[in-house]
Image (cartoon, rainbow, N blue to C red; front, side):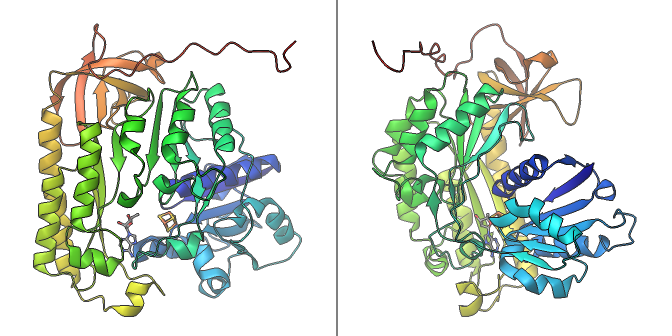
Length: 461
Ligand code: 5AD
Ligand code: SF4
């Protein structure tokens, strides 16, 4: 019996790719190993977004040398994903004990590459980005019983100057609507109740497809699947909510009013140097349109602090913008120059690390303050919560999420996992709400799902 161990770095897209890699390996007869020392094939699925992510992988590679207690004798070591795509065969110099390198598409060929490696071929690289990527997903291969990621597009056509992703994941391709709906239907048949649609600029989905459908069309199609309770999507770009997007999704039963739409900076000068293609005023307009249709929409952002040339004044503008928009969640990153990106070629990384740290902490402190005030406003309300299962910090309690993506902890029987329940909120901290099961329906409950459609004969008469 062959066993494979897959370790994942980076974003949700990478987590999904790891599930696809595990599926390909399982179809080829591999069992899953929970520890590298038990595995015939060790796979690191890597991220290149910041230097730190790559350093972690390089040090992990160092610890996975043959002969180490972490390796089974004769096992094969593969590096896949963004770092593989970016560095390619150069990685064999960094880590001569690596057997296989693949990129962000060809990882599905791992079983064949493993066989070749076992047959004595070493240093195998599979880095094609051009292949049409369509992979029949087996709904059983997922890490969560009730939730699943679904890739609706791959790649990115934008050129944000700091970003490595266009290099590592290639040009934008959307998956056809019918394929996505079919994949979600099969996941729902297997017990999934919430899907998160994934794409680098997920709200530009569809423009290359026949008839140019958009994300609102896709969300509406998914809304008709009776067993599906919630849809989410990440990550959006502020410029691509078009054609009355907000009005069209607002009343969908499964739509969750939590949108991750990174601002990256609150300074127009910095946004221009980042080539983000919007100004703060344009971002404000997007927010105004969203709130006109959905007053309680929750917005989350990413921020890069210490971008080349960012002054104290630029940073103060980011802080003011975070407060003005009233984001509910922020992911803050220190600028990391990525090889051969436009910002790395054009600008010096001139903001000292200490200033980056201070700016990072500053934005996080403002965000914490906002999040605590927002959470406190939920106390006393009864909210609709989708139960994930036992809480990680206290197995005796359950954990779930509101439609606006706040974590809620409460007491209840474990069989509620995967169900929507009304929870009255008693107490709030920055990240988490605490409450109890309510008798009355939630104030923000979504409409009930439609009854299953009656099956009509395919050929009338
Ligand atoms: N340095 C720091 N942060 C970056 N991000 C992307 N590229 C870089 C970089 N070179 C951040 C952005 C993006 C998130 C996924 O990572 O904020 O939205
Ligand atoms: Fe995901 Fe970007 Fe990291 Fe690739 S580089 S794994 S796309 S975050």
